[in-house]
Image (cartoon, rainbow, N blue to C red; front, side, top):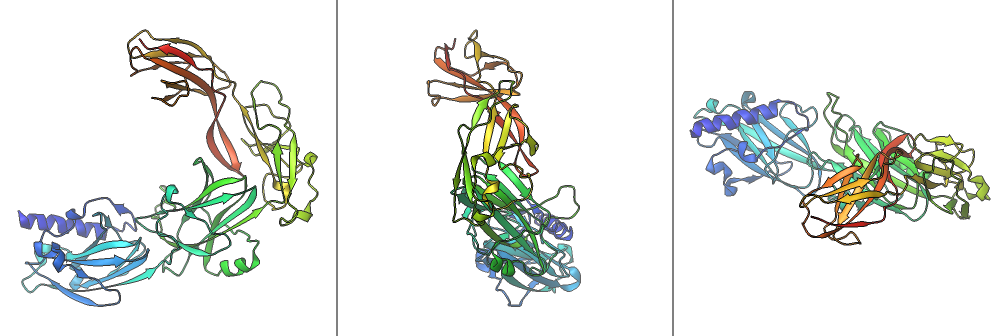
Amino acid sequence: MQVRKHKITAFICAVILSVNCLGWHVETMASSFVTTDDAANNEDTVEELEFGKDMEGQLSPALSGKRYRIQLKTSGKLTVYLTGKQKEVTGCLTDQNGSVWNPVGEAKKGEFIYQLKSGTYHYQVRAAKESEIQQSGLDYAISAKFQSAEAKYENNSTREKAAKLPLKKIFYGHLAQNDPYEYYKITLKRMSFLEVSINTSVAEMGEAPESFEVSLYDKKGRELCSSISPDYIHTYDENAEDEYNESGWIMNGVTEVLEAGTYYIRVRVYDDKNSKEPPRYGRYKIHASMYPLAASIKLSRYSAEYTGKKIKPPKVFVKEYPKAMYYDDRAPYEPEDYCNIINMRYSESAKYIKDIGRYKITDQGISTSGYRVDGSYAYAIFTVTPVQGKINRLTSKKPGRIQVLCKKDRQSSGYEIQIARDKKFKKSRQTIDTKKTKQTIKGLSSGKKYYIRVRNYKAVETEYCFLYGVKEKIYGKWSKAKTIVCK
């Protein structure tokens, strides 16, 4: 039984390494790939694999596998060199959680490359076919080298752990096989031109250019824009540009004029499901610049309910910033300059405001593509919302159930119903999203009083950034709350 177990584990390990997965993660427990020999699994017998040091070993019927511990203090590129007689020796890399990681890139004979985050790993050497282990044993040689990614941040893989994005500073980031996301956070005090450039190495990591995706999110988690294809991005800081645009680097990034607020930049390995090419991992350079505009505008009001008729545009108030870059290019900035209406569903000029959706109020005669950092690109967003929701009737005919009948709104695509035990809608609150005007709410407490309200919404696609639509729901006002005692 023990011999059969050895054969199965050796076969699986050999298949994993022979298939050119090039970085795809194999989710499995390390116990499926680690030898069952007590001697090999004993921590006292696990050797430290020191970088740059050649080590030799021998497999035998009594010891069919050997484990080595690898300590990575930072994230980066790990290369393991393993040689044995006539390809009779193979190996598996596992992390602390027991997951197996395959080599990435085009590995040469006996060379296995990994892009990993910091941590403790184990590399197990074993025979490709245990049945071929002779009494004389199988000799092998193993060594490793490590190239640190020199990443500024090591633990920013989620939006909650986003690192503060330094401005006008060039630093490294690293996307590892077991950590393929990195997040950065930036807060704009006023409307600004934001430029984030990502460069991926062509030659430094010894592989083809990585394919990284850069995405911009707002505080609500909406993806405002994304960039995948390499794109040259101008940097206004000439000194930074000379240092940053080195030969042999591919550029990606986002450039947008954004309202005041908090934003998140996500960098990830782009995995095209339709491509035969595997995802690429490695390090990248990142550089960010932020330039407050020379003017900002405010509106007399920012929203209005849909009426089916043209809506009068709001009044515009302008504030200038004479010390801002390029202030003199178009100064002075007058309220009458900002009379251009952009329908954000299509990023096209609109003659008037009418339909449900969002509209940019901006400088007259300015196209929707391209950006400047003078005040001409200042804008404010005006929203046309669905009409206020209304509840026609509440009934409770069966225990634990309440039926809600909403007033139909032809301009809305759905309704959001809220039910709670208190009028502030904080106690035992439930929210139901429905396309129908009649909804039954189940699982309620009999004999208890409930507060219910409804609001209409319309699902629209909004281009917060040029030519990049965000699907969102635009909500109307909540209806007046009604009460009912559940049967």
